Amino acid sequence: MIKKKLKWRFVSIVFVLLTGFGCTPTVIAKHESSMAQKSSAEEFTLKGKKYAGREYYWKKPFEAFRLFKKAAELGNPEAQAMTGRGYYFGYGTEKDMEKAAKWYRKAAESGNSKAQASLGYLLKMGLGVKRDDESAYDWTQKAADQQNPIGMNNMGVFFQRGIIVERDNAKAVEWYSRSSQCDYPLAKANLGFMFQRGLGVGKNLKKAFELYSEGCVENHPDGYYGCFYLIRGTKKRSVDEKELIRAMDTLKKACDKDEASACRLLGDIYWEGWWKKENSTKAAESYKKSCSLGSKSACRKLGAFYNFGIGVEKDESLARIIFEGVCDEGDIVACDALKYGIKKPRKAKEKKKK
Image 1: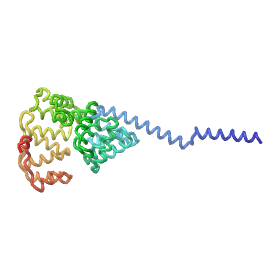
Image 2: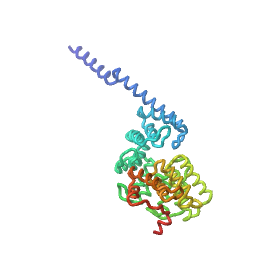
Image 3: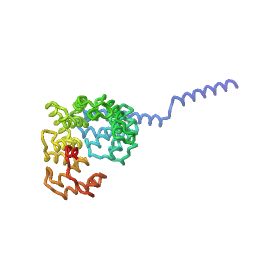
Image 4: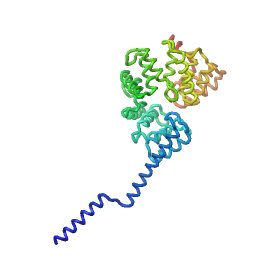
């Protein structure tokens, strides 16, 4: 009787050990399949990076996008973020903000800080998704908490403009400074602006222009803002001619690479005469390109140019069509212009006089 009990205990122990460390063939197959997918996703991502080259402007966008898309579909968060980037900029595929938002969200929910910052931006601007400032702030903060430079810079914007949070220039300066330490050019340009105006920090023109110069970077999608501030502020502080030429060339190259904001800022420089002298024809050309790339403010300026025949042949009907198109996209300023009349665009000097 005792022997039988011992035998049963021995069998029970073996059973427990087997069930603890073993698994059924189905579970093994699923595990191996999952591991194979993960391995393939990582492999596709690495190959995509080789084709992309630099992170900002992909060397071979068509090849890179297809590899990132394959890896994204297999669940790789980094590839999902890069797929979102491809759709956002139109790298290797058509521009599609809704698809960009979809892939950024997948990556963001997996904890990818780049995707979190990008999704926050899309939510703030209402690109591909319904505008939602609260969600935009939440995703931006998650990215910033992971020390993502874009997320930290955008947190500065929230505090500087008082969006969702109380306006606090000192906190904005803190966030811009943290992002600048990661060598993010847009943060340097924003921080320079704070120093130039004395917002949340002591006014310091020397420091401001040093930051503008550091923030004027070629081959970076956000590297032209510092160039713009550098050129715009030449009358407040003398800037070396070579530095100005470099800044203007960088801004032009960014516009050539279809950066909508770069083209708009270039138009402002020509219109205001901040570069050598006023050139309304070149201003109109820059606004036209920026408008075609989706800049609503550039479209409004272009419409006003057509309405009054500035730098282009006067065409009031075309001006109205342009304003109607921007109004249909939800631009309140354009809608008001259609309702109360299109105003002649004034320059910075004229605005100050008023």
